Length: 390
Ligand SMILES: C[S@@+](CC[C@H](N)C(=O)[O-])C[C@H]1O[C@@H](n2cnc3c(N)ncnc32)[C@H](O)[C@@H]1O
Ligand SMILES: [Zn+2]
Image (cartoon, rainbow, N blue to C red; front, side, top):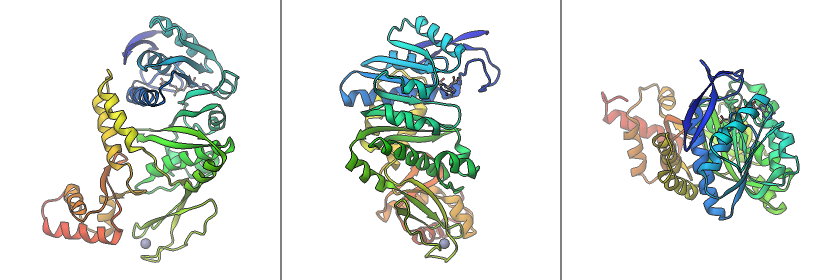
């Protein structure tokens, strides 16, 4: 295998030569995921700062070992990292990458992630699940082997299933009905989170999401896990459904596993489309995000500017209502061209509603203004600013 050395964060990593990123490469390495790895370094550092004790990490899909190496070098107070991969070539290159960086607290093991997680190594403080495609079949062993108080970091690249482009795979993997709406990426994160919550609940554990995002071809959720039967039961109240009207774009949330869901939109009478079960609780923690922003400022990260932009957007939209509106979609519905989104946002803010942009979509607006009022406001802004199109 021909290789070359790249530098990322504070480590040098030997990676296979490649022309095109592919799961068929002898050992997988994707330079585009550098920001994803930078973000993980920030989140785990901030988590470690809050728990205030040394931590163990399991990177169950190690590839070249780049995450394990970076976690060891760039996160304060990491006492032990276990890196696993089923590919023997990955294990070989990951071991030599630890030597290349003089790292002695990372153990690299050839193993299937489910077996590695259950192999009596004790419970982990942090479990990182970064598979090809869906993490669905690894959720139960993660849920069982994360220490109460621990942090789960989970990636999913099967966004076409989570977002409803492919309906049946979402049913199979997540037991959920997806929906192809303008906010389908948010729904995707909520479907994955609900699946995590259900797997945790089996172990009397529940989650608190610190940060989640959908970027390019992947989604990622960072969540603290806690234990307790009663609180787990209460946490399941966050599971429910989103009913969406494809005609007028009205939507409503319905909590519960088997709730009664209205069939028709109360505004226009059209038949609702329903997505779920999904997580209707928070998908970001504003205070933790503030800590992440400060933490990122203090670290050496190549993708710092990009990740700070993302963190700020997520900070702004945290604590906003569930789902957002797409100004283009509303304007299409109103049969007008879009006014400037910032003019609309300023008007919404003037009326005292929650309003933010969203990291999910450039043309998205997260607001609790009732849709009918929002439509009228957009029409009014458009009238006053004719000729000033977005
Ligand atoms: C997306 S890559 C991981 C990339 C790596 N985390 C990084 O940031 O560069 C997925 C890795 O999981 C490995 N893999 C696939 N199925 C696995 C399984 N069931 N258990 C453990 N590793 C697996 C693959 O060999 C591949 O190296
Ligand atoms: Zn309607």
